[in-house]
Length: 115
Image 1 (cartoon, rainbow, N blue to C red):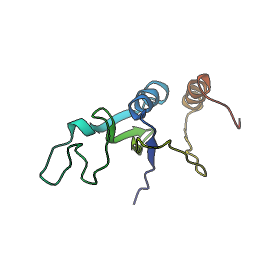
Image 2: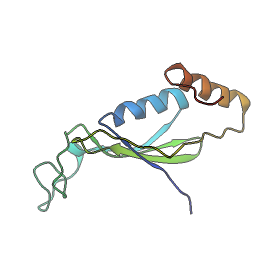
Image 3: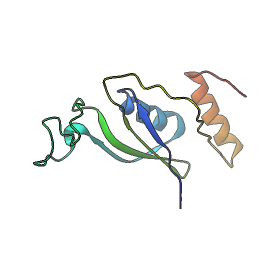
Image 4: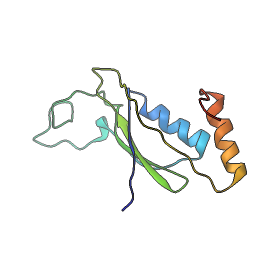
């Protein structure tokens, strides 16, 4: 059974998807915003059954594939700042050129903590 990480973003999930596509060649498998979700009688006016309020443009669920691994993601609760610690995502390439390209692309706008 594959294990897929689920990432939550503070209102910038669409930007993260575009960044992963640009820097890592991520393939977008699925994306739906809260505004695109089908309405049902049980849903609140915000299209969210739990009553949480999200902007229509917020991502309710997305799935990207990077180097054969699926990563799911969405926008977090808009009421607070997403704050996480204690996890790491590892990119494992079997090709030196691909690994170098990923590293260089991520390093261009990131902070290198271990090289």
